Image (cartoon, rainbow, N blue to C red; front, side, top):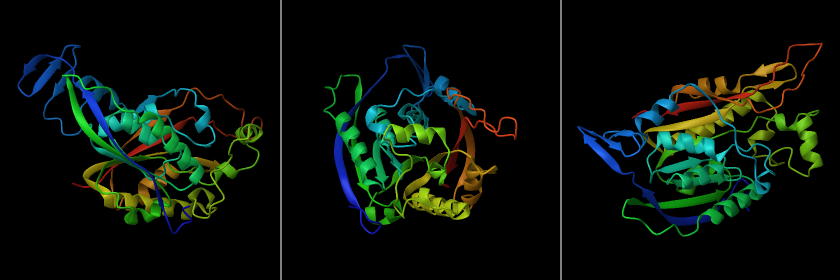
Length: 314
């Protein structure tokens, strides 16, 4: 097993993905209009989105209500939904391209890549989460349906590595077209007194990521935590192709009456490596309000996360 000095290739599978092609109703100078009214410009170098979906994604905030988590992924204390990841993948890549998540968790990013017809590479430090990710991915890597005459074939490859992402250079990942990932919430999952922690503990679920000294979620010093995260994303920079994007989904953290602006500090720390293009704010309005600080102090309910979009220079 991975112990900080080794890594294991848990899964390496090829997959044929048949992208169904919409019926073209009208053709113009550099564009086509599909039967359902959508318009697509043939010189679109970034993705396969029609003008309507491109415009919708440009809004700087969005509300996403994920489906209930399945039993096999509830063990992980901080999962983010495949449907959300898929929207970002579809905007920043085309079918057949390769997506990376260096902090894979239970496999959401690889599943989203598969669903959208992209290849995927995932790295997960903890063996128990990597095993869940492999199980989930293998369940979806069944033989694809027979191609239709209106489909385009993409030869995909999925790799799942269990080990420390700081060893990325040794893993021979190859060129990557897009990276989407979400860091740990610093050491906040170890904070005492959390009602969520109590509920998860009573249900026999993990209340923090691990006891591993290589787990960044176990670092007590905030500045060291931010520095180490930035170091990891600089390693990602080396495998990203020129012009490719990195999306980091993070939230600012409150601890002992003080806010630690993780999202903003990451943006500043990475400014010497990437171009920060913009932010999209994920509004989580389906979380129950709690009376934090009632009658004593101002403590807000933090129901939003920052989706920071960085670009590697062309």
